[in-house]
Length: 561
Image 1 (cartoon, one colour):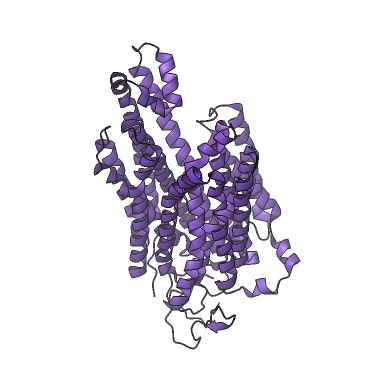
Image 2 (image 1 turned 45 degrees about the vertical axis):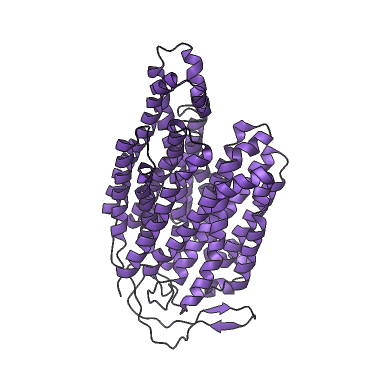
């Protein structure tokens, strides 16, 4: 049943204290006013109250109880986000130790691919087995993968362990949002998710520094092993402190009954389809030509898998991902907004360090520091959107404003970053991060505002899947645009230069070679690097136009009392 304005009697939610006793957070006899959005069709339990003292499941709660739960949840978010930036900073050294630099990118790709494959499964499995056990399972997978990375003796073992880590990482973030939609009123979801953004930003910001420090002092293996104690602590805290309302049907079912509810065939077909799609985006244009037999074969097998999944999902009693969700205009719009906005953000993020490494001869650490304004913007954008939605219940306005801020960011970079960028001008990427923070808070609320209770978890997992697909697509698209423009520009600028082919080859293979050039040659080739970055911003402007159209067309209602 979707949100309504009719009050329902709620049972008290309890939180397990340190003494093992269970105490009610709020008396169920207290008078409460409930809030909701407009009514929509659907079946299920009474759902999505918006009273400040009521969670979305209709269970009363105290504010202090939610903050205690939030602390437990955010610890896992911080760990997973720290790991991602940590590996980005150290993967070159890891692969070099195994004398396999060519496979270094798979330390990142394996994590992202397995994360995308596992993402949609958490939603349905949490409906069957419960939120808590799925969150704990994600910690276990992440911990096993982390230990495998730190103890791996071959490059293949470390890559396989990264894939296991990705399975856990998928749930460590998405399950937090699913749990928040269960516990807090809809008009407060964006506000609480903004705190998730804060911890994510903090993790991404310190992960690279921590990884570099550990690599230089104790070795790269400790960059992984040091993550085990906080992961185990997070698992213990979830077991000890996290008490969630349980579905009556789930409580009555035994192990085999729950196992029978899992759509194994649908899960396999969906996972295979996602894996192939992400693999095509990861390989195409950079590692393999788009028209190569490998890409064509993957596209054919992926298309067949998608068709089979759609046919199967229509017949399954409890599909792993309901196809009917993709017939809802609000769901499709917000999914596409997530994909496009993440493409814009990641495309800019992978290009900014390259720009400063080429034009300012910045070290990798210095180039990464130029991304801090975008990370801060992401944090503030989420906080602002959360406060706005909590104050007046209107979630569409931040979604529409986000691409406008992002367009401003792209225009500023396009017209002012000309190869001699000042510290002040480097702050111009702040609006881009601000836009992403806003849209991922507001679009998530827009996605879940009118969905039936039984579809919330699955739809939320799909939202994170779309963000991951957007990240892969953005990396691939930005890399292809940058490299194609750079190659073309260097060929034109070096046409009258002696040893043109050797010089061109070395410049395209290693950016550090720029530092070895004399000032005259460097001044000749520099416009090619500047123009390559500008073309990425032009691509971003085009994607922002698409995002703005989607945002304007997306449904939006006020979360009313």
